[in-house]
Length: 109
Length: 116
Image (cartoon, rainbow over all chains, first blue to last red; front, side, top):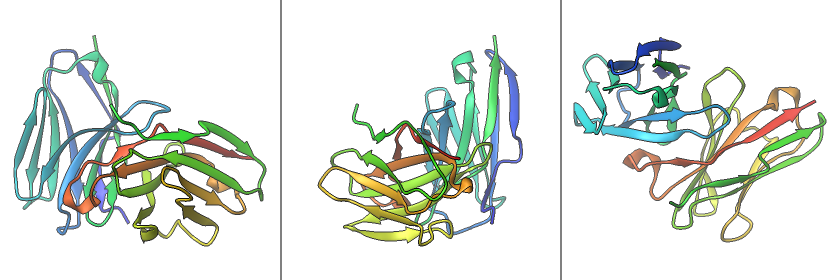
C-alpha cells in the first residue's frame, strides 16, 4: 500500500538553482502534508507543512505547493545550498503520519 | 530546543532475544509514536500511543511488539523475540496534539537495531 509516493529516488541540482521535489498521494482524506529532511543516521527533521485546504505555504527558501485535484504536492527550495543535500520525505497525516519513499537531493557547489 | 532522545543508539542482538528500545519524548507532548526504517526502504509507521494506550497500530506491529510508558517520562518499544527482519533503525517521535491536526511530529535520532 503506497498511499504516498515519491517517484524520483534522487535529484542533483547546482548550487543557487531551484530544487523541486515531487510527491503524489492517493488518499483524499489526508488532512495535512509535511516535508521532512533526513541526514544519514539521524531522525527525520520537520521542514514545512501545508493544510489540505491551502495550495501554497512558504517559509524562507522553502515553498510547498499542493494541487488537490491532481493529488500532488511539491517542495521548492530556492536558492539551493550544498547543506540542503539530504533525503527529503513527503508525509501525509490521517490518523498517523504516512511517509513517501524519499528523494535524495544532492546540491553541487 | 526540546528534543526526543533515544537509547541505545545502536544495539546488536541475537535472533530470538528480547530487545527494549527506550525513548524520552518532549516533556509537554501527549502523543507518542514508533516508526522504523529498514535499510534502503521507507520510514514505516508502527504504533501511536496516547493516554496510556495504543491508539493506532500498523500490520507490522504484531504480537511480538509492545509499547509501554512505565513512568512519566519514558516510552519504550519491546520486541519479544527478535527476527533477522527486525533489523532496522527505530525512530521514536512525539507531538503535542494528534497527527491529523497537522501538529508537528518530532523525531528522535533513532536506535539502530541489528539482529544476527
